Length: 375
Image (tube, rainbow, N blue to C red):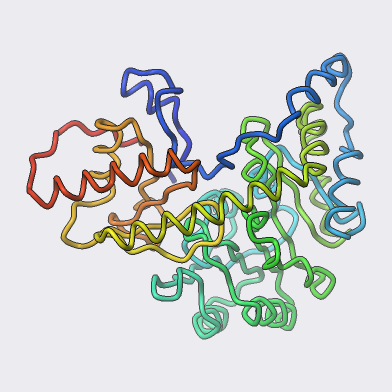
């Protein structure tokens, strides 16, 4: 299974023959404000701690996360990015078959597959926001008899949400069947009111996977966490290597959780720019956009236009803009691509580049044969 992810500005810049800073990255969905103000000072102040091993239990960060979410510290496990926790799941849940609603973050399928767990698939459809319906899931649950169900909320790469009633139904149905329920919530900070967190005490085998790198703009530090029952959390911690979260990441996480002004500014910016981007794309024509609620949008090109790979190549060559073509996601097509929500001027630059591309393709202008597709 080939790994294809957004955010690979280093390889992109190498192929373009430019510096990474010259590429405007819309492929990785990271807070456009960057890290919170003051974080650098907090990291510099912690410099002296680098002569010691990190706190093996991540106590300060775990306690801060527990307070924020109103859970016990024993229900929180911190990892070196959410991906480290994802790869621990197969060993923790002890299941032989998992049902995953598609599309989803590809590392889940990889993590279960390499651990010998059979992966059944339930394909969601565009007209339902690429989120599964109850009827679809019931059919797949009865057919495949999995011991665990994985859903992505907000969807990846759709950004769409499951309804309140659907969330409650999922919790009740999986609990009734004695199944584990894994919910990817790595982008839930952008729409926290829709979290599964209120149901955590209702389901003894529910696991919420979270990330701190997206909302707080610190993907280079690798920081994620898991919320679950004390039993599942303890089992997860036993399957992680010691000191997997370094000192600076622990300091950064605790600092970020206290930045409420930054949080409010982020939500105001992202919500406004996301809705503006969606409206502009739909108004200009050639694009269908799902109603995402995170900091990215999934877009489908009109059938009269070339595919998203051609668009990705054109934007790279002409404008040094990097988008995420989505043909590599199970259940998506070569006409689908994802864009991150960035600062207003940067979003305008993307909108203008997309308009020029549509106009050029409508006139039948010849495309270069050079492909910069990142394999």
